[in-house]
Every structure is written in C-alpha cells, then in structure tokens.
Amino acid sequence: MREVYLDNSATTRPLPEVVEAMVKTLQDNYGNPSSLHNKGLEAEKILKEARQKIARRLAASPEEIIFTSGGTESNNLAIKGIAYQYQNRGRHLITTEVEHPSVLESFLALEEEGFEVTFLKADRYGRISLEDLRESITPETILVSIMHVNNELGTIHPLADIGKIIKERNPNTFFHSDCIQSFGKMLIQPARNLVDLVSISGHKIHGPKGIGALYKRKGVELRALQTGGGQENGYRCGTENVPGIAGLIPALDALPDYTEQNPCNQELDRLRKYFIKGLEKIDRKVIINSPEDGAPHILSVSFPGTRGEVLVHSLEAKGVFVSTGSACHSKSREKSHVLRSIGLPMEQIDGTIRVSFSTYNTIEELDYALEVLAEQLEIFF
Figure 1 (cartoon, rainbow, N blue to C red):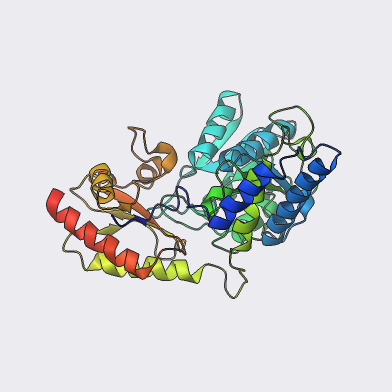
Figure 2: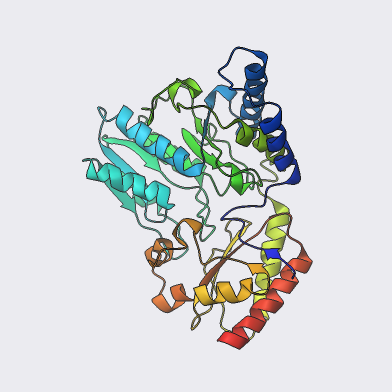
C-alpha cells in the first residue's frame, strides 16, 4: 500500500545519512566525551562539530548552544532555569494561551510555586496583541516566553517586534522563544531579534528523536534543573547523547540556507498552497483555521460535521498519515487547548485535522492524499 506521510509537525522521518551517522557512532565512536583518551576525544569532536553547525544556523557562537534531550527539556530548562535564577529581581512571568504543553505546564508549575503568570490571549488565528504584551510587562517581569510558530495553526509571531517591545519596557526581562516548529524552515537570528533563549528539536528536521538544543545568549545565567558531572557547562548535567548529536550533523547539513531575501522554505510553501487549492475542489464545507501568512509547513483544516479522529484513522487505512493536532495531546480526551483558546466552536474543533509537510513530500503524494480525503469524507460522513 502507498504511504504518504503528512504529519511532519509531530515528527519527521530521519534521513538515511542520519541513521548511518548514528550507527557509526554507536559502533565506532562510542567513547564518553568527558574521557581523556582517544575514544573520548573522538566523541568530543562530534559534539564540537554539531554545536558549531547549530550556532551557524542561529548566527550565534558555539558556546551559546546547550545540548538537551529535546524540545520539551529545552523549554523546561529555559523557563524554569530563568525563573529560579532571577526570582530575586521579580516573580512575574508572561506567556500565551496557545503555547506547546511543555511551555504551558512549566508556567503552571511555577504558578503553583508562587510566581505570578500572565497568559496572553490570542485572536482567531492564534496571534497575540502586541499592545497587550506591552501593557503586561512590569518592573517585576523577569521572563516572557512566546513561541515563534504555533505547532497546530502555523501562526508566526514576529520575534523582532516582540523582542523590541520587551527590551523597551524592561531591559532586564528575558525573552524565550520555542522555535521547535520554525528551526530549519525559517530564518532565525535570536541575537538580532533580541531573543535571549531559543529551543530547538532534532526530530523536527529529519534528525533523531531524543536530542535537542537550547540557545542561551552569552551572559544569561540559568539555574540547572539537574546536577551531576558538570556537562554542558553545568547547565545540563549527564553524559551527552553522542549518537543523537552525531545524527544531527547530516540533518543540519541538509537544511537550506535562509536570508532576509529568502526567509522561509519556498518548497514547503508551494506544497501548502497546492494542498489548499486541492481542498477547494472537494465538494464539502472546508474551513482553513491557519492564517494565510502562516508557516509554510503547517495547515489546520476543519470539516464541520465530521470527527477528526475518525477521519485520521480512515485516511491511515489508505496509507495517508495526518493528525488531529499536537502529538503531545493526541491520546488525551481533552480537545485542543489551542483551538479552544482561539474561540472555535466545538463542532469545528471536533472536525479538525492538521496536515504538515516536508520538503521530501511530492505533488503526486498530495494528489493522492487529496483523492483519498475526498473519498473518505464521502464514505464516512
């Protein structure tokens, strides 16, 4: 049976070169990077190379890159690490209602510990009001965390504008952005945009699962969430995941180079627009939840009167893989907090699927997926 994978916001298929690099590391370069012998030095070289490649993508320095186990740990380390380290300056934090669960639940945990948290509301397309942000920042605000690209809607938040507002209102307020859905698909320059901390994940860019990184601007301090052998300059103790880091290297090498003139992945944008045109030909009420100027690879679509879960499984039976939303909550009975936050009616939320593209998808695959989608809507609904 043909397989068309359109759930790339949940995870991506590792490139063959990624798998090869990981296997080679497991078999040959298996030393501990903290060891002083040659096996350790070879492992340390892998860390150094990957750190340099990530730094280049972010226009940063290698010393500003901390390896983690993935996006969730990066978000936790950034948010809790800042809150605990700088609580003597103030105990007010700001985030949005449409963040990834790893961000929202970090703030809820801090709220239980006595921190004051402002949760900014979003409009119909998941955008926050920059004026609301401006008015929310106080002399007590030590951290603002706003995602770059929303993982369910594809909404893009303007990091440069947000960074400028934060630093104008309170130069001592740190700015963290969850860039897990944008890294590798768009231009990200944290220092230029006044972003102090950036979270990224390997398995969203055709790299391995279980590896991620946190960009931490030079001069910013974090309270470590785990202690031990002092790895990653003491910010993330524990032996580094060398095979995972080795797998990052070819994944990073395969990414396009972005510039101000070419700030996002044009091939992904072409696939997204082609799919939207295909949806318009389906004889069914279709509502596009994603903003027109959203990220090039994420599309949230509702078919009122259907059940998203049923549609996902009926498509899967024909080899087409999509999701109902965030993979982190896909097994939860609770409906998407993002779609509820932007005020969609329950019938629309119930009938929502998320389609997310990869540059390795083809037009032929999209044609097949659209054909199957129309067919399954006719059969089941």
